[in-house]
Image (tube, rainbow, N blue to C red; front, side, top):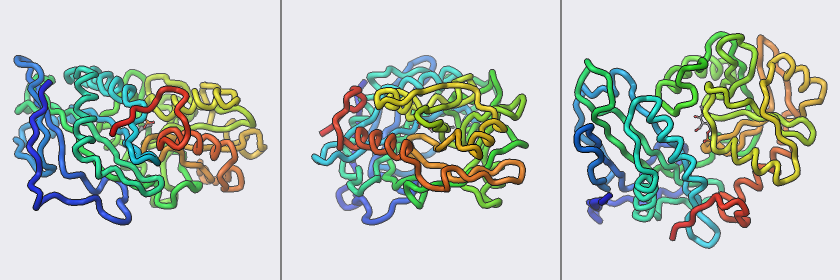
Length: 355
Ligand SMILES: Cc1ncc(COP(=O)(O)O)c(C=O)c1O
């Protein structure tokens, strides 16, 4: 793959802003695009200044949401270099999502090369403030100009880079979550395990309901029995039972999170037990009240680990661990972020260092 470089004019180049970034609102100086067609396959990639591009409103993605994306981060190390974390896993998941949504596969090496080249160019956009990072958003949309036939005969791949603060404004502090028993996120056989935009659009209404009721996020139950805990809006969910980390199994309805998988590996390595099992909401809340379940947290690239301090379900609020960050949650958070930011040695071979 050739990557054509069209650099931004010096006069127009922006610097990484000082202070707060928020999440996903600021973009770096450059973006990468690459076009696909059924006849010609993938074209060369182009790096160009970040900004609007011209598109036809008949593009299939605008009508039928045929799109997929990824979310991963670049972390500034203490030595000034940059770490990517388990980027191979995001690249593989990208192709799995593409397959599910009838979009073309991209060569894994070429996908990695595209990410690395863009980050090398905009390396100054990787923040060095503690806990901030550069969010990487590879995306693939069906760009065929048709509202008729539905296929992925033409597609547009792009990568955006966005400096971000910790996802929750309060940082590493307990959040309150609302267990949703009316709306559902995904059914078996559906697209719940694909990272496709429709899953997120479909969750907005319930999220709005939860926020209006004073919670930060939604916890989804399974769509058939409305009984088993699945995951959250953009994160997987874990519970601590003494020395054991418990999380829902990958049954096809939840996104197989890279953070979730990393924590299962890390927890074992640190001497905790791990269990992937169906989690009955009534049993879980009874276990929290009795003290059998000692901690709860959400996990994903955006927030890394978000401790859960309160769970609202059917009109009752159940407080977890006195609404404080638990010791296991903190231990896992310190270890995982330590590896991501290069503060502690990476004994798993998870990081790729640039620069
Ligand atoms: C629905 C959903 N579940 C879980 C996750 C966590 O996945 P990861 O740890 O790979 O970021 C995400 C975030 O990407 C998500 O959007």
